[in-house]
Length: 164
Image (tube, rainbow, N blue to C red; front, side):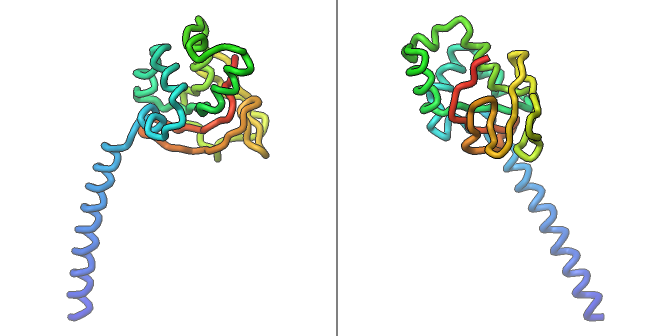
């Protein structure tokens, strides 16, 4: 009889806990940030965010997705500006800015575990990037931090701006 009562109590506790964890999961998914919010909150993608605004791509990357974004850091943009011998304002004024940014976005969620050495992935710029492993690279950019998840995809931080 005692075993039966304990089993019923245990069942009731498990039932209550399963409902509570479901509620918390729903609350977490509602407050989860999209790719733009995650990148903005990180604080080292200011130039990328300014470029996305200038190119009119913020709403796109706040959309449903899923997206994979190879996100160059502010330091990566500084290197590009020196390499091209231009200012940030000149970069933001380029006619091909939108195409450059779309070259950093894959219309699917690609986690690091999905990657294979030598694979090519088509971007929203309608061009492919090449994936290398050991070390993990996108074209000639090193992936410095992978698998930063957002509600509508994933961000992989890279140390160079990709040019189509």
